Image 1 (cartoon, rainbow, N blue to C red):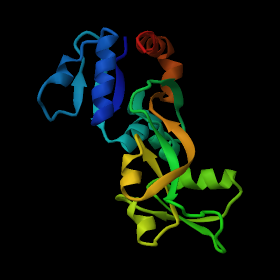
Image 2 (cartoon, helix red, strand yellow):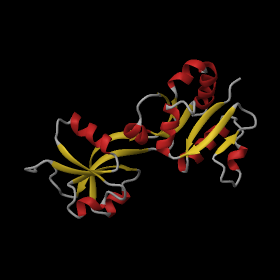
Image 3 (cartoon, helix red, strand yellow):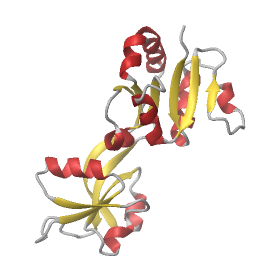
Image 4 (cartoon, rainbow, N blue to C red):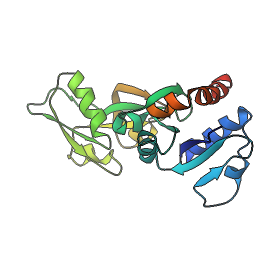
Length: 208
């Protein structure tokens, strides 16, 4: 039997994925050790776990280095291209929103609206569906400050509770998309190792 390679997003999604695996009866003891190792071989399953950054999960899966990956829907929408998205794992839940300063009339401008975001592809697709031309400004840090300084009229960002928006004088004016962790599969791996992959998927699905 082949050993499947699974890329996990380091951090919060990694911890939730390990908890899900253990709930499904998969021994994840190597991942519980206090170590800086990034590749872990599981003792009771034909599985190797790689711990990588979110965007790299997609890169490894798309290029066939890993058979499967667990990554947030936000990363999929912004960077994903060629793989199967086969299971919504439910954890890491949040949402993409469009947010403005409180009381701001976003659509009453006599020029293109300026949107600050870490997710230009998500923002572009949203406004294209709305039939609107906008100027998208890529921000790497906290986008909430952009409307306060006049750099942008609104932001497209991920929120969990909305507290950060409120504390910075912003309000969500539209929900764009629900976000949670997803299980993705390399296209070629699904053909070659379909039975093995689906057995793993069924294990996870049975405890969700």
